[in-house]
Image 1 (cartoon, each protein chain N blue to C red):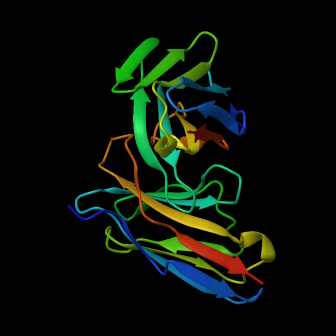
Image 2 (cartoon, rainbow over the protein chains, first blue to last red; image 1 turned 135 degrees about the vertical axis):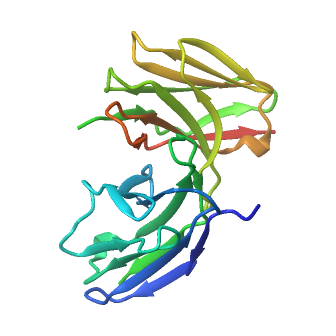
Length: 113
Length: 112
């Protein structure tokens, strides 16, 4: 069974530019999560989808971050404009509906210069 | 703000010893607790989950939970150099939606 796929794996941009990350969860997983992991910290939940609906985006900086999961399968996370403090690894995870077991993708490492 | 606290380490143990990793949490209503292992440059990987007070064993790993004291621990027996990684404690918040709060992790170094 294929795991959670993410792309790109690495991205370097200048501050004030925009960037987008893509995630394809494990087949059949209704719940999709985007996390931000800053170096030396644990992952912090940015947004959680149940199918194509948002169930938690309380820690998403909505002035610059947006995410969508239009067909309830893959998802895109966007940052516009990026700031230096957005440098982090962006992790996507998925789980079966109602399950607390989350499976993580390889992550996208973002560096903002 | 619900929190999960871990000692950042590094925790250094010799090969073959028992490594003990600890975690405390603030949400008294939490019912589900997880330990993830994260190798440098890799994504977190679930190694243990625990839901009831007491011990849960899986191979060389034992998770311990004490809800009254709000702490969770992970013991790794017969530690191997391949166990060297950061161990993340995660707690599922009460209130639904399976939201996990992660600690900052404890870095474990097992030396030969």
